[in-house]
Every structure is written in structure tokens, then in C-alpha cells.
Image (cartoon, rainbow, N blue to C red; front, side, top):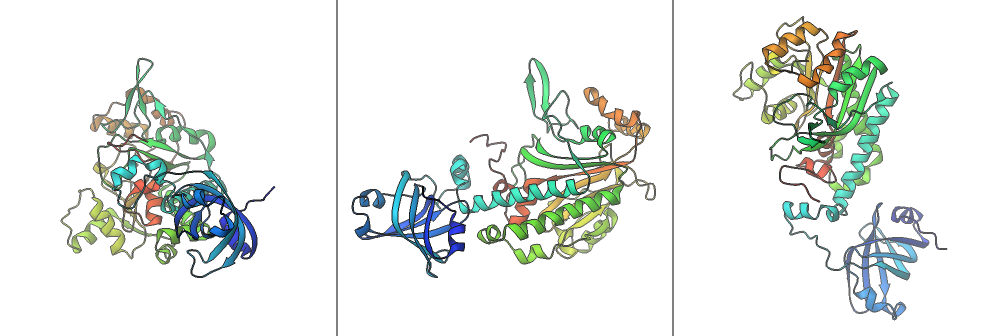
Length: 429
């Protein structure tokens, strides 16, 4: 039997007989000569077929269209004129699957590409994006395991929403109301009493009607929680895991980054430690740079992107937001009363990348905040058992995987960083 190798392996071999297979990426030629650029999951290569060698098959060869699947055997050689620097002179071809008028072309708008998403994933752009996404996910898993964290998932279906509000998806669960999870956190703050340090990589759902390039209704959520961790521990882990993932991508996805035209020199500059500033300092910096903002205002995307830029085009931690801007479970910084033991990690060009905090361990303080905010946990009251039975100092954070991947790739939307994005107007395919 013929031993097929990948296109990348064939180019590494560089000369001699090879057998490769894949899909037609481009095709052109005349009545006597056919040029087929073949792609597989590793690369593309030009294949040359002379009619004189394929008289019996020429009709099928001449009718090959984009995305037809084929197997070829032949002799590979270096040719700088070819798309990837190598060319195969084909001696044998087998048409495996025909393709007729592939419905993807350069003139399609975002909506039409969305309708054909299952086919658009075949593009080199999407293929490279998905490989980078895979590397990022593996790197984050690897970092957490190296640092003693246990992976534990929470259910996607719950009898109560984690934080309430209008951003929750409600559904019928055998006649009862159920909700798709917004976050793993409530479960995690109880997990840590068992395993100490926990993390998860799982989907989260937000019923936001936002149509911005940086929002989807279903996204993959990297969430971390650790017993006995304080705010500095929390920021250190967020910082190190991000740098670890970036380095992994730079090492393992050079070709994919090149296909996407990503700014590798910029990624190489991202190093720890990241700059740390307080919310108060951030407000002053923004005011000095012409932003109309005052103490007590929440930051919008323009402010978040600006802060990363003003501090050297690197990630920047912003800590100690006013308590009134924070959730009931955020801790209070006793050294700076009225501010939280929280952080937002802002990324150049994007804004918020990670949201985290040292949680409030005191049950009484949490109950007071819930009353003040007029929040009734209802069926989620079990969450407070983490404070009722052996409460300890703890901290955690959450990172949206697609936002991180899109930032690495230099995309203008996170929709390009997830295989099948879900938005308020997109449920298929």
C-alpha cells in the first residue's frame, strides 16, 4: 500500500517520491497542463499534471473544482515560484470526492459566511485560528496542572442563575424553570473546600443582546479559584498563565500566525510582571488624556483600551474599584476602605481580558451587601454554605477564551476565534 504523508512532511523531505492527499485549494491551467494547489491540515503545495500522462483521466482532472478531495503520487522538488516553495510533478492521481461550485468566495459578506460556517472553517484563516485556539486551551490546562490545580466542571444546567439579571437563558426542564450557567464560580467557591485549588474550561452562556464584535452568547470560560489565595496570588496566576499560553503559541504556531498576518514582534514583547495601577490612578490617567470620566464611573471599552496604551502597549492590572461598582462577593480592601480587592486585566487594543477578585469571606458582610443591593439568592442560597461551614480567604478569576485567542490572532471580532459562534441573530449552523 502507498504510504501517504502530510504536505508538511513532504516539504521536509524536499525531494524524491511522495504521496499526499487533501483538497483542491486552487486550480488553473490549459488543455495540456494543470496546476493544482493542494491543501491539507498542515500546508499547501502546488501539483503539476501533464495531459500526456493522464489522457484517460484528463476529463475528470480538467473538471476538478475547489474543495474536491484527491490523492496524488509524484516527485517533489524545490521551486521558489510555487506558493509554498515546493512542487510535485504528479505521476498518479485519484479523485476521491468531487466538488461542484463550492459556495465560498471572496465576495461573501459576514452574514453569508455565517450561513456557510461549516464550510468556511476549511479556509486557511479559520484552520490556523482553530489550531491556535487548541494550543491556547492546552497551554492553560498545562499551566494549571503544573501549579497544582484540579480541573472540576460544574453543570451547564442549574435550578437558579448564578447572579440573576436579564442576561440569563431560561428553559423548561421537565416542567420546572432551569437556567444555562453564566459562570462556574458559585460551584467553584465550594469546590475549593475539597480540592484546594480548582479550575475549569467550559462553556458559559450570556443572554446579552449586544451586537458588538466582542460579544457572543455562548463562549468558553477559563475560570480559576483557590483556597487561601489573596489578590496578589490571583493576579500572579492570571499573569503567568497568559504569558505561558502566548509563549506556547509563539513556539508551536509560527506558521499559523504567519498565515493570519499576526504581529509576532508585538506578542514577543508581552512579558511579566504586568503594570499594576489602582482604579483611582486609572481615572487620573484617563482624565489627563482627555477622557471625560470621574471617580465612581465604570470604564467603557474606550477607557479600557486607552489605559493599556497609555501604560506601554502591554497588559495592565487595574485594582481597587469602588465597592458600589462591584458584585456582592467581592472583598473589601481594609487598607483602602470603600474599594474592592478586585482587578481587571486590560489588554492592548481590546480592553478587559480577565476579571478577578479576592472574595469576601465574611458571611455577615455578604448578607448585608445582598440586602443593600436587594438581591435574593433564592435557590442559589446553597452558595453561601462556602461561608457557613469553614469559610477561608480565597480568590479567583475568569477569562473568555475567544477574546484571548482573537487578541493573539489580531482579529477584529471574537467570532473568528470560535468554530460556530452564537449571537442574538445566529443559531445555525
